[in-house]
Length: 474
Ligand code: FAD
Ligand code: NAI
Image (cartoon, rainbow, N blue to C red; front, side):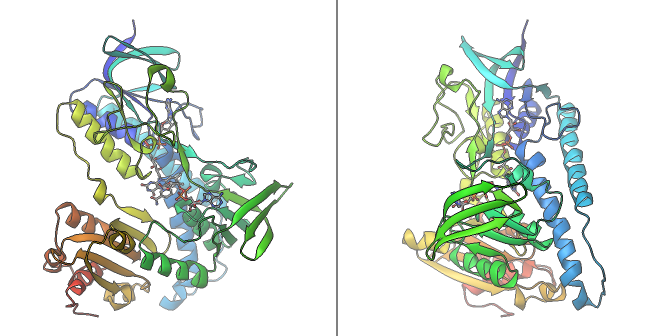
């Protein structure tokens, strides 16, 4: 007799495991399946998805380690701290990252126990709709569920003719496990992964060249932020970034990779010790048996959903990277919570307009809401308040004062429409802007709130004051 559940979640990443926990909290009998072992020593399927295993968490661990190394080499001296013979032990750095991942994925297993979610290791796929109950195959077993939530996530996009072997040519998985600092590192794609992983290895001593197909740098960010980031990453930090390139040929040799590409100046050839391919991600829908059950996908292979993440099939939902929208862990988690609540008969809520973006380079880049170019294109009248970190006592005392906070507010109503930060701790500072926008605050609302002194949050405060040209410290 097959097990019966109210909810079966396919995929144990942030969208899936959060949906499962919330559904169980709401009294629904819930199971979650996962097929990937990632780096599990016993080869057993591991919870946590891309984010915990080969994405957000391991990349941030390496970014932090490499940032400390960079500081020891370049910033300690200004504090009067003398360091000699600083060196990097890459295997220890990688091991630390692996330990953090293990700790977190074990934690998710613990959360499943605490919230009584059944973990079903194995690949999940649809069999059929049996009079309002879904028959789902998980591994070799069949289970039955009233509701199924597809949370199968995404995988790195590979390019034809570029054989990713995770040794010489790596995607995000191999990029997190490079054992020695490559002398010359090539990165294809100046997106989020390209910039974050490029930063890690640049700080550790690689000569990094990033090859980007688009003519604009960081086109999704506010143009002022993108301009500042370009200046910092290229001129100050020495990353080589070529825009508008066209890849011609990639050849893996024994110990190097030769990349031929075209720029405005003609054909170029570079030889790298390692090549990271980071050109976006594709949704995971293969193996779900989507065709047989009539699940609708869009032109990019993502599961089609409505505003409540409901698919075209009754009681089948989809959340996270496998549906349209930004491929961000927190967006997937919010969708997971919303779907669980809708299934439980609650309203469910997500506000796609206030989902923050963060790029964890140094300085960090974070934004929420509309960019200046988006407001101009939509003919929305706006006012701007922009304050550099250089005008902030805390940033100066930390010796980290590059960048700025830029606030865009409606010219007539003063409602905050977008906040854009490039600077230290931008990832944490953006939370205030998200809260403000979620409550439809005006720039004056935030300008009238007391911000502790001396803190970096005062840059946000001053930028809100600057919208009405009344900043006090700039
Ligand atoms: P995933 O995390 O991809 O999880 C889906 C899971 O489903 C996978 O484990 C997969 O094995 C499993 N699965 C698939 N098909 C089946 C099946 N048929 N049966 C059983 N299991 C199945 N986002 C951020 O917000 N912040 C960051 O800092 C950040 N950093 C990142 C860094 C890197 C290097 C990468 C690659 C991504 C990063 N992301 C970040 C993006 C983030 O990882 C994803 O948005 C997030 O993991 C998506 O969650 P998900 O649950 O939808 O999918
Ligand atoms: P991306 O979409 O951010 O960037 C890919 C880049 O590759 C683009 O700039 C694109 O123009 C370029 N590109 C595509 N084809 C190319 C080609 N043939 N030659 C040269 N350049 C080419 O994708 P990325 O960096 O792979 O990351 C995937 C996703 O993972 C991100 O979009 C984001 O959603 C998520 N992520 C989030 C992070 C965060 O929140 N901090 C960190 C890392 C990833």
